[in-house]
Structures are given as C-alpha cells and as structure tokens.
Length: 222
Image (tube, rainbow, N blue to C red; front, side, top):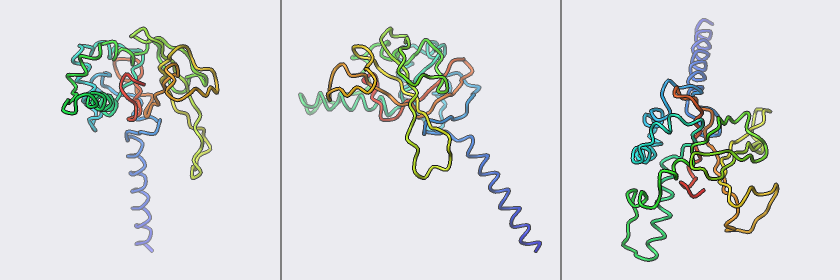
C-alpha cells in the first residue's frame, strides 16, 4: 500500500513539473510565449534561443535601426524564414534570365531600403485582445498603408476547450481596404495581402509590443 501511495505521489509531482514547464515554452500557435521579458525588443530577437531572427538582426544592423526597433509602439517581426522566402523568390526570378545568378542577402540590400523594415513598425500599440474584428488602418513608420484584424478561427474537432481562438493579422493595403467578403481575382494587384502572426503579446522591457509573423510570410512582399 505504501508503495502504491509513493507511486501516485511521484506521478503527481511529475505531472505538476511537466505542466509548469509547458507554461514557459515558446508557442507558435498564435498564443503567448513569455508575456514579459527583461530584454529590449532588439536583444530579445538577438538572443532568441532558437535563433529564429538571426537574419532579421543582420538587416536591422545593416540599416542601423536598433533604436527604431526598440522604440516601436508595435513591431511585427519577420523571421529568418520570411527573409529567406524573399531571397528565394528573387533568386528564382533572376535565374530565369541568368541560371548562374545567385541572389544573396547583399543583393537584397541593393533592392530594398530601410523603409522596407519600417513597414513592420506600427506607430500604435497593438494587442490581440483589443484588435478589431474588421480590418482597421494603422499607421506605420514607412508611411505606407497597413491594417490589422483579429480573426476568429474554426475550432478543431479534437479541441478540449470551449474558449474561442483568434489570430492577429497584419495587412498590407493595396488600393484601399478590401470590402468585407470580397472575392478578388487571383493575382489582382489591388488585393490586400495578409500576414498571420504566429506568436503575439510579447512585452519587451523597451516598451511597446512584439508580435512574430508566420514563417510562410515573404519579407516586404506580403
């Protein structure tokens, strides 16, 4: 009997430890990672344990934008994948002309400006819980048109929770906001382009909010 009691105590402690560890993991499902961090926005990105923003840090450093990123009311951070997606698209494009051409990060710097990164700096503090259910124009540091929207997600069949799930979207507005339920033609140059946040609500010590865009996003071409 004592052995059984000891067994249940050990199992219970193990589950408690497992649960406490899970709470602090970095999520990629639109939820929160650690809500607050003692690091500035720049340092949080630079010291990310999975090195998800190493290329982004290189771009920030190239344009000397560390202070701008730290001072952002909201920063929508593109991951390494997003920047690599842009380079891959450009490489495929130039190879149609010259198959030996190898488009690199240095080539990218020749095609973009600091405003390409400022596109991801919002002048407003944006939080998932207070974001509107309909697209809303928000000003960015590049002075182009962008918008935000909180979108209710279909509930998975295996979901154990009744709580609604929302994702935050950052939107590049082209030719004015798309009307609700619009069904534009494919490749329409005026269709708004949407980037889903895979992680939201990180609060750096430098102030503002930090959201992380989905890895499928294409840098500056969303």
